Image 1 (cartoon, one colour):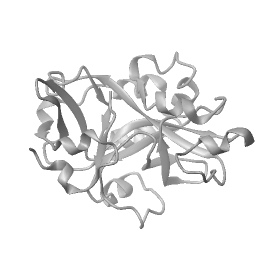
Image 2: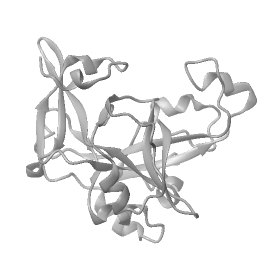
Image 3: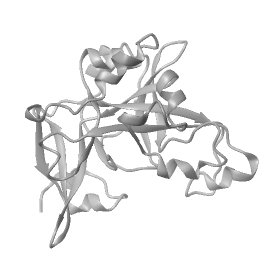
Image 4: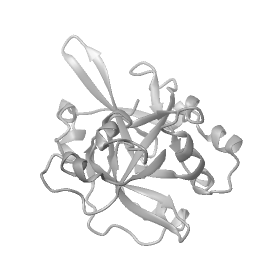
Length: 233
């Protein structure tokens, strides 16, 4: 699975590659993005390719309330076209989740030890994702967030697609997020891409093109932030 990731590097190269309109000037580097937090994703709408902030944890449009999002932070690549929660989104609402690394935890006698997985050149990339729009019900609005302030409008959320782990990740975890780079980014966003071609993208990223780096146990806490999260202990 993927339950925590980083987005530190400059986004401009990826935004230019997919011809994304606009940007997020207020966005700050994130060292420990956790489920139920907002994060930047790229979506293709009828108007253009856009960069948006969405909450991590997919809430399908038909859901009774937004609590289901905490259970849908990941979607298994093998069953996207069968699961009701993901089937329509796979066909119509694919997105790119901007990142440059992700964490997995190794079980040791001293407790959970975090590792950060990055590309060998530590360049930014995208996870293959799906997104959805959920309209708050009046009775459920106060339950959407940890604050007492209800959302002003529809809730936009996303999930990260996972696949089997490659040889680098497998000693730590048996799943990993689907990583997309280069032309795969445009293919994933293109509404005309055949499902068979999209399915071919949902493979483990080559292990020899990645690095595994020790990280701080600070990332065990979802609220931890800052470059200290990357410092091994």
